[in-house]
Length: 212
Image 1 (cartoon, rainbow, N blue to C red):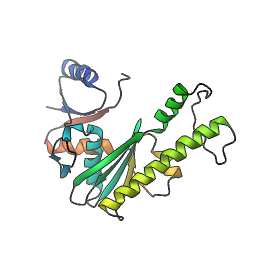
Image 2 (image 1 turned 120 degrees about the horizontal axis):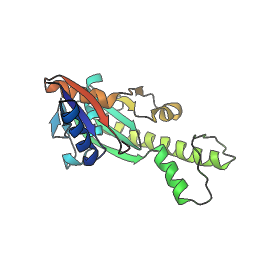
Image 3 (image 1 turned 30 degrees about the vertical axis):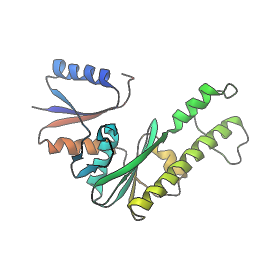
Image 4 (image 1 turned 90 degrees about the vertical axis):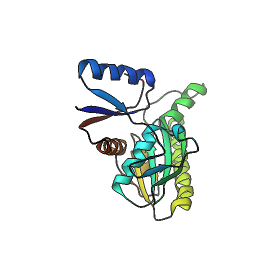
């Protein structure tokens, strides 16, 4: 029987709806990846393993399929995560900061004299409100990511592989001094590895938002 494997960060209601559809319309089961103490050679270093997001867990597993040495994984979505994987496969910890669009939306919603705009156009010196907001968000966020990467490199080793993924990865790649390996499908790579470990035929997909 073919199974669906999913990374779910969209909430239980969305997952239940898709699970029902898979069962009633596709006659197949839906399996949600569960964060655990250990999976596919990765050991979870969180104090409470269940607090770690399944997307981060899958990204770490995906990173391990690409490289067996210590690794820093940067995932650029609504939030940006910076996670560190030791050479022995231990997830030693990670950090979360607001993503570019989240910071942008916070300024729009909380600051009355900043009008909304879509495209980020950073410039130094910034000589307009659009440039000022854009440069603050982009360079501030990139700087925060770089500082976190440096701190985690101090823990897992300066020669660690740097991997970046997520929808806003290009902004980090454009402005960061670090050289990342860009792997757009990193979460799906990890999900595929988990599915393969179950020794079954499968489809894979992420459940990322509640906008379904």
